[in-house]
View: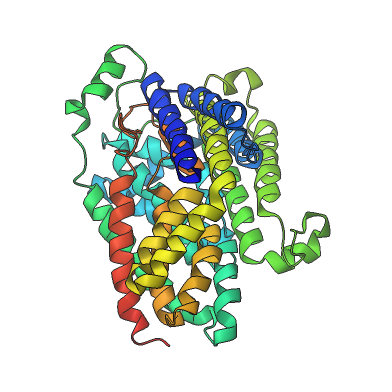
Length: 445
């Protein structure tokens, strides 16, 4: 009876996603809220935690990025990137994910990816490259960085679980860095082959004809920019670097700013840091670049970001409600499978990560099972890239926000939900990352 109930609840989640995709835009968020209501009223599930912090981060980033765009900062950034990739435009598909990866490694959270979204989109589109290619793999990279970051919650969980076995943080990173880099390289290469060129994409052509997206314009490297363009971009980048530094030197930041200590007391709450620093960035840009407030909401970044935030709110709340109510049953079932066939450990990691949309949750739930059945610490770390299963379903905040930012419609959640833009780079990364991780685990013990 319990199994039937869980299946019916999962069907509600799938139906809400399906209707959201069909409606499009903020419809994702609206139908996510409807699905949450059905689970709470129809199945008497306790509402999960609404993704308030994630939505607030997106809102803060939208404001800062839109103020910068109004001052010409995004145009300046795009121009600098265009200079770097003008000889080979497809390099953006490699540059963008590694920037997202490195920022996450430093900050310890994938939320640092949000400020990069408008820049990655504009660089891709101005070079007439299908935005999906760079955006999808960059979104994946922003979460992969959590596994290679010495300051992320997931790495802290893994270190706590394996530390007593003598497997240190250094050994974890020795496996995860090469596995992550190689996995992302292969995923980026595959993405350069994915999807039709913009001129042949029917959805994009429809939006272009309806005037919902401007035609791509090659960046004129000689055209004059507003006087404040460079200044606004540098202010924005300085804010991002402050956030990265706060994550990388979290202990020191907690001593300097004790009011921002996280729940562990050993570092700062990076979520609050992102929100406040992005607000400061917007304020400084207003003053230094003399941006008119009325111009900010007219920028393309603003409506795209708002759509992403609303979609994130509904879908993430829906997913959190379903997972919170069924986490024990999910973990117990998959744990039993791992106990019978240890080589399925990576599959269990991926499935639990997919259902919980959390690398930390999957780590804490499945790693102890791996240890109990005799898997070595090195082998467990080698298969840890499988926690990127968080992206197998399009229910993660960064996925929803990325879809919202891509005005061309090339980055999408497919009609059948599972056929979304992030599936290919996620699967490629998991397969390659686990293969490289297991190979390295033979030498690091």
